[in-house]
Every structure is written in C-alpha cells, then in structure tokens.
Image 1 (cartoon, rainbow, N blue to C red):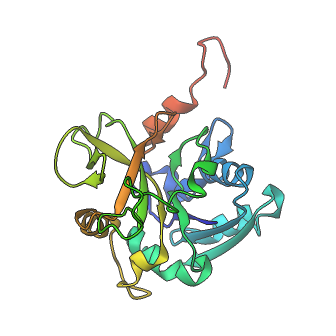
Image 2 (image 1 turned 180 degrees about the horizontal axis):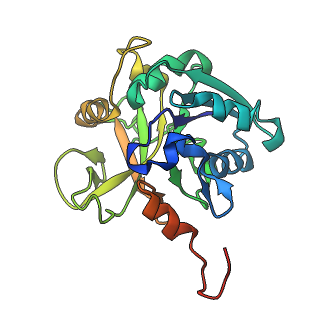
Length: 239
C-alpha cells in the first residue's frame, strides 16, 4: 500500500505562521506535523508516500528530501494552485498506482494512529459476505471521530451497512481515508475538486464504510490551538 499526505493547503487561519512556513512543517511537541505521519506510516510498513503541495511547496521538499532519513521513499505532486482534496488526489494518481491507498491531511495531529489498520481495509467489507452485494463497501473506508467543538453537527452517520448521509448520531470525518483510485476517475488532472461531494455520492451508492477512531486527534486551525497543544504538560515545565 502507498500513502498520500495532503499538504497543499494555504493554512489561512494559521497566519501569520503560515506566511513563511507551510502548515505541515509547523512543529507539535518538537516535531513537524507531517513528520509525525511519515514516521507512523513507516512504522506500519507503508514506505512509499506521495506528498502534494502548492503554497511554499519548495520548503517541504527541502525539509523532507527523498524521505531516506525517515526510512521512506517520498515523491511530490506539485500544484501551481491548490486543487482541493479530490483534485489533488486525482492529479497524483499516476504516482499512487492501481491499488487502494491511504490519504491523510498532513496538518492534523494523530500521534498514535496505527496505519496497519488501513492495510487490508477494502479487501472484504460486505457485512453479509456477498462479494456481489450492491451495497458492498468497496470504494472507500473513512475514519471518523467524535464531533469536536468547532464541528458539533458532524459529517456522516455510521450504520451497520456503512456510512450514511442521513441519520443520527453523526460523527466527524477525521481526514484519514482509504480509497480505490477509480473513485477519482471522473476528475481530470488539474481540475479543482472537493472531496465532500464525491464522498456523499459514493455514500449514497452504499460503497463507503467507516469506523470510529477513539485516539488522540487534533485538527489544528489557529496559532492559539497550536500553542495550547505545545504548552507544557505541567506549569513548572519550561518550553
């Protein structure tokens, strides 16, 4: 399995920090956000990693290089302007190959996520064991989290038959997913395309499953959130 780290966002709400540094290179607990992902992917045996970038992308390439320092093989998909999540994935498909891949937003913080869970996710997800079932969850598998305070209504409901656009309780997409490349076949390289509408389309078709991730997860949006996460665990500790 290969992985894609989505690193093309501008990080507007994280300004002024992102005026001079791409958001995935901001440090959390002594390590750049994107490096946490790379190390955890390598730990799971996923060493072929594609990184897309736009804003200050050269800084990502300069900092991470070919990935050998982490035991990874890094390839880059440069975008003149950020193509949104689905557009960025579609453009990078020639680097990702024909097999299912895991895609992760490079600016979330999930220090304990075990990417081994992703390796065989799409192999057999039909709950009734029928490989020809019309509701087979074979195109994508999403990891969900409990709704954070900034997104109280969530994104999708979880049912025994997979994810649903309707119903309750709803959970929030953690920005971690396993996808088959054909999910993005309708998007031309270079097109701007958001992931949300594409997910909802395939969820309606009964082809997307998911599960709840209960570990530490942070979607860092502002300098204040970053500072809070980097604050000493105990008041007397020095930064």
